[in-house]
Image 1 (tube, rainbow, N blue to C red):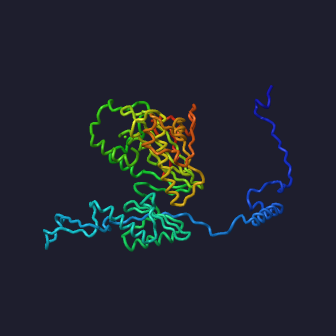
Image 2: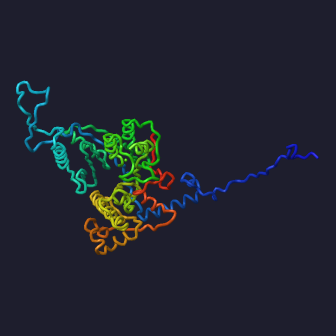
Image 3: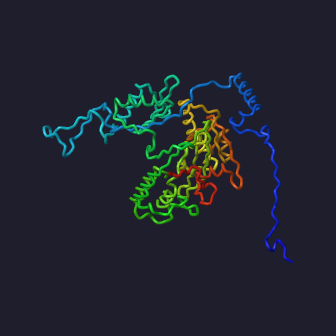
Length: 447
């Protein structure tokens, strides 16, 4: 028997269709342009608008503009410093005065290589800024603040590199013009490269990275063609002073370590790790909240050579990471609680300074700083420091966290680790490549 299925000759499907008008009253509009054509929606919108107006929900003002950041560079900054003491200098070989070859130079202004030069330059600049109406910050002497009515300007100085920001571009330009009268300046516009840090303005925030510095370091050490690594140190082995062979070129070792200190403080493995992180950086995101959140953690006697503990912390303001540290403690802790307590005290000191700075900048924080710790013993010590023979020495050398207005939260141990616990463990562990903490949340690839 021959069927339609075998011959692939099926009957055509017939679809029935009817036409009817669309009931627009039953369709919910998604925009004003759709709703304005419907009489019922127009009445409802007008009633809602009248209600908001009668309650004085808003006031019409000019739209606020974003804060512009300008970078300026001072040419030959140290030569602008005025000396307050007498300093004499021999005439340079090949440039001696023909009339008085045996005379010496009595310096009227500072010169490069002079001990007093940095201090003299900063004194000259700070004096001029104070004359222009700025005040020096008590939390950071290189930060200057100018308030005039509702206008405010922040000026940050690092040797001869200066950043100025504020809500008024005209006020920023006025300060630059006034400084032009005293110093030879170079207006760099918006910052793109500041103190070796590349600055990329993105719609999602400000991305900071060290791509240029890393590329130069890899090229200098002839490692630019190396294969990248995902971890700067081995997560399977242990390091000690008594194992391994001495490095064959100690001078080269010291040179590379000195360069790495500007990035993150170890030799070829770290360089290969840097090769894979060239485009990664720190993303500063805008946020309506300025509340501080801190994660702190420490191991106990983790260093096999000295038995000192490694501890660290990171502090977030809103969504942005603003301060961090990871290093070995200076003394040997007698217990894990004492090791954790020391890093809590260090966090408290840093948080106090940040709070002091925010207060000077008049940046409000709605809540007390939140500090996460995964050690119950250290948490109890912070709440109630019981003085006895085994804890007295800790109070002497640290700041008591209880004396600060903090919200201390304990992270309970669980398996698998919670995200916040994994975040804490980054400070003292060699994290494997497959570990959940190997995330790149702030990566930005330049185009």
